[in-house]
Length: 281
Image (cartoon, rainbow, N blue to C red; front, top):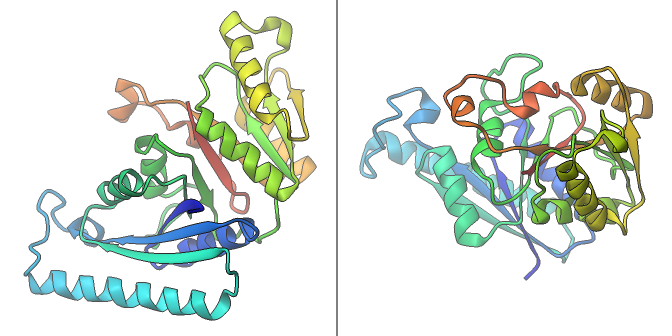
């Protein structure tokens, strides 16, 4: 059957770049690519509490556009792709974006979501898009890979995993991290801010679990002191030219869901040309 990869698209250059990046990353793997476009009133700035009537003329226009542009993506992929290991499927859904992603992940048992770090809307400079953050926060069943539009594809040679070992690891996420490292022949650099002798019993247990799932991958542990993780990560990426970042996105607290506090990814900083793999804790 092969790996099942979900690629949401709003037909922007960001989402197209994510599709191209994924094709090349998994060029030697048997994969099914599900390219999803979800359209609803929310995406057009109208009343998000009211769903579109299937018979409404406006809905028909948007539906036709969705199907037309998905068809153009499929034709473009077919003309460029000669990889017999890859199969492409397009999905057009009249749903709110997040609802559509949740439905597809459950229905198709998606292994990994890959999407642009931003969408078509004019997000503020130096910020991840709201849809990207919403998917990471709300879709907890599989990892999410964000691909910035300025990312130039090259198989990652070094993946930095930022962790304090506090969050319990999702086994599926660790397997995907190890798999990406293996297919790219990449080294995993585990970056933390605490020495091993200062870790709690729970942190040491989580570190042992991590070691178990990346034992077959070239990896090393790095500790930086007296800095914030965002600063440590930025210096590490800049100096070593690491070309993928991964981190553990812990489940949002009640207050964080209400908007008090930044998402974990925002605390780590924005990288305009480095893909970020969010694993769920």
